[in-house]
Image (tube, rainbow, N blue to C red; front, side, top):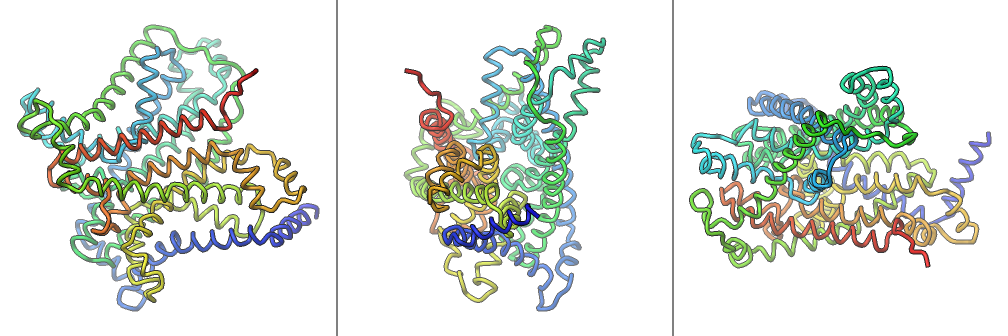
Length: 569
């Protein structure tokens, strides 16, 4: 009874606040138009190809050997990459949490965890080709191997594993830190070996987290477009097959049906990861450790593990360092020295690099604050407000996390090239910079929303209620009370959205027009042509931009954030 009265009172307060009601309506309209509508259009196009409902289009694409092979290839790559990335991430996380490392190894781990964040998604593909391809530095010029083929299945698996394992490493590191060391030490006191403790105590506690890390990596792998496009060769995956179906075969209905198949796979995996494994992980590992963990100092364990992980980290760093070095070679594959800066000069003088960086920078700069603000507003509504559409807003805003970029790109083509439901309404945004900004916002929205929800759940409701009692409206409370308390998450979301936008490719490569030159599209184009030095020059400048943005964010949060240290007078 009391609970029902409280809910009724909350709804009454909400309806009495026009700013809040308007915000909710605008949010629902935005999420419906730019997330649900494109996906709904894909379903409509897939089942209504000739004006009547049928499975004809699905039957046609499943009769295509290339498509059925692409499904098998995608699932095979996703499974192997998920397992390898999870195991590698677990090894790195275990060594950092349980083994006493020196500062050098710790610094390597931190660098490895940051590099995938600040670099374009296909940097390691470029490095793999330049180091281990037929004209690679290591294979051809150091080892004298001329028939090595780095393209195909193993090329994709290696590159994706090295790209995605830092995500597993960061996820599992947090889970391992939350395990109470007294549980493991009790087993050690009973005479169990370290291996037996790990297998019988640590691993069972960690299993839901391992499943979570595997599924996250699996989803990232099967949705990846950039790496299979550059290093896949003739090895087809769903993401590249959809792209070629719409750009090469001009079969938009077939591409829509293929996109629905890929979407069903990712949504199924996302549902398991989100609603089963995440909840189970949270229930398994709760609270803080009762005391500090006694780190392993036994040299027979410490030295091999530290050396192994340090060598792995150095190899990954070498792969990233190869990109700026490769941009300085005079002629790739034939002449490596003396180093030159001519490719950097040609980026701006011959290949419209200034326009590419200007367009990418401006579009990302516009999208970033919009994404950060929308994320915080959605987080605020989800955590602090009670209304019937709350579940809809939360679910749809998170849905973009499970939608591969290629699928979203096809959805926008089918949904807006002729306007809403082919009526011409909103057709004007198609082919413009506005639709690219919208895609950037939609793709980055889930990350910022999750961060905002975590931050807002730590704020006591009474703080905001005091402002309401003083007569402030919802906008004033959000602007003067809530936002200042979560400005670390806001700033973090701002830079994360900028970095994700400026390094995006999978969705925008289908939507970009000659009016806009984007850096990632240029890199992909030069890599496909075999102009690796030019691709590396573009990628190097892009890495500098994104890394600078992260450094600026860290400085701003340290200097002005809520977590800054208070100096005592």
